[in-house]
Amino acid sequence: MMTQNPYAQMGGFADGRDPFAVDPIDQRTSLLAVFSLVFSLLCCIPGTGAIGAILGGASLVAINSARGRLRGTGMAVTGIVLGLVATAIWIIGFVTISSGLKMFDKAMMQPIAAVVTEIETGDADKVNTAASGFAMPAVTEDQVKAFRKAYSAELGSFKSMPTSMWDLVAAYTTVGQQMQSYQPGSQHVMPVPASFDKGWALILVEMNPNKPARSTGMPVTNIGVWAPSGQEFWLLPQTPGVVPGVPQGLPPGMAPGDAPQPEQTPPSGG
Image (tube, rainbow, N blue to C red):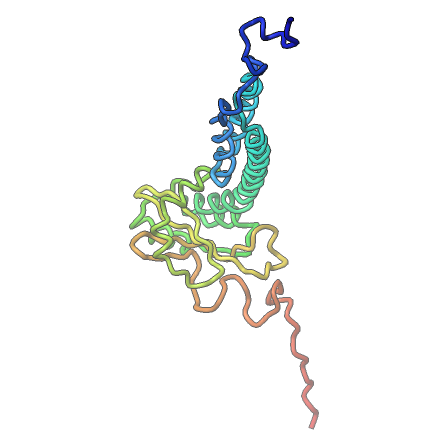
C-alpha cells in the first residue's frame, strides 16, 4: 500500500513532515535589519538616516532570498521609513539654512566687507559710497585714517570675511574663544569673524533696532573691530547709551530738520 505522502518515497521524515520545510528553530534575525533600525534611530547624526534606509532595503532583499530562514521584515521596513523621513528632514533643514546664510551674506557680510575694504584705502568718499545703504552718518577722512591706523597697529590690513556657509562655520569656530571673552557694550552689536594679516578678529556691527526711514539696507549705524588683545576700535565715536547716527530725543527715523519747531511768540509792543 502506497502512502499518500509523496516525500515518503524520497526518504522523507517518518512522521510525514516536509523535509524542505523550514524549521522555525533554524530562523534567525537579519543583522542588516537590526543595523537598519539602529542607524535610523540615530537620525540626530547627519547621514545615519540614509544609511539606515539603504541597509533596510538590502535587508528586505536578503530576507526574501533566504526562503524563510531570515526574519526581521518589520525592523527593516521601520528602518527604511525612519531613515527616509530623517533624511528628508536633514535635506530640508540644510537647504533652509543654506538659503538663510546666502541671504545673510548678501545683506550683511558683503556690504560690511565692502566698507572695510574701502577703509583700507583711506578714502572717505569711497567709504561713504560703500555705506550709502546703511544708517551711518557720513565719515570724514580723519575718522577713516584714525580707525585704520588703530586696528592695523595690532592686526595689520583687513583681508576678507567668510563668503560661504562652511567658511562661516569654520570662522566662528576659529574665533569661538575670542567671542567668549568679548563683552559687547550694547546689545545691538553683532560680532562677525574677519581675517587680517596677523590673524582673526571680530568685526563689530552696531545696528539701530528701530530702522531709520532713510536707511535702504541693513540699519548699520557704526562699524568697529575687536582684537584678540581685548582692544576695541570704532569708526565713529562711541557715546555710552547712544546709538551712533541716530539723533537723540527724536522719534526713530526722523532727521533733525524734520523735528517740529517751537512756535515763536511775537514780542508785545509796549
